[in-house]
Length: 455
Figure (tube, rainbow, N blue to C red):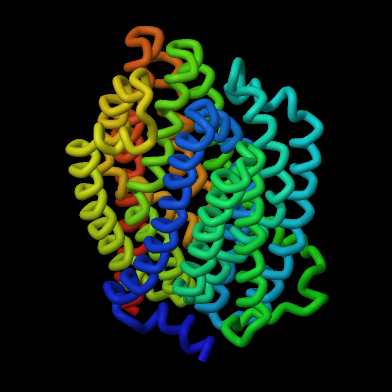
């Protein structure tokens, strides 16, 4: 039964597959995003707005280390999807075993480094003034659970590669619900403050990993690794590394932008400006959940069919994924533009934050209707195993355009320059991605289809 499920990626209609893959992914991201939002609301109301800023300072550090697991997961999952498409079961097993081994080695090493340099990293990421002490408390505790989170994120990507999005969805829902329950108990009932918020997050990682471990040990998974599969193989590690480096680079740039944003905003407006961005960052995670869901649902479909050399289906999956993602992005745009003030008031009642955040949020979301093309385009190259273009297109928005704009515009426009950097980077990167995606489709997919028809 498991083999039939993965094989359906090459048989069922693309529209049905995108819905089947994207809806569970979207629901999982939605629940996770609601968890982040409600967690922020709990922290803001039960601890204070400084605690929101403190958590936002820690996020890029813990996200980057956790992203190592995500990078290994997505890099290996691309290999697994194509291997299953070609019916190369042994390569899929070897890849999965190597993913587990390297995830443990890398994340544990990074946690040690993160703890050693704790007093240097927190101020570097904007944890200054009143923000430093609560950020340090949260950082230390959350970091202990990062290896578990890394393994969980890696495993979640592999579940999707097997064509089982509903299990991946549950894997995202369990820790989200668990975190909120533990937030209520640790912060509101036991009054543990930042300690409670941190232990709730770490506990949620453990719940997630427990479910994923059950999945792979049960009959639901077709990837039954043996001890010999855990032995590191250089050729597999190179392929995982090349594709995973795309995701890792993306998260590294995200962490760098957090660093720059927190420091620039602290200099321009103090703690309240850092809090403004913390709220907007949560809304970016929450509001874009359906767009990200379509992107995640698209990856195994494109990868499997590319491996099976069904290029017409690959092209169809690209077109439909872009249209579906664009449609939901437009809905998100309308909601943000209409209800930004009401959204911000849910997080805090502090006048300084309420006065500046709604307009800033509108600027940040101004180009959301066009980002579907950029997300699907860069994801396509990763799905088919083309690491270099995937890396370059992934870095276009935040690396090549957003960071330079962030360094230049605030000098002329102050804090407004920070918020203008978001839509401008979205616009430029979408144009660049569209050009290269169109070129790839013409030169590879259409040309190959034509050659096969002539033969």
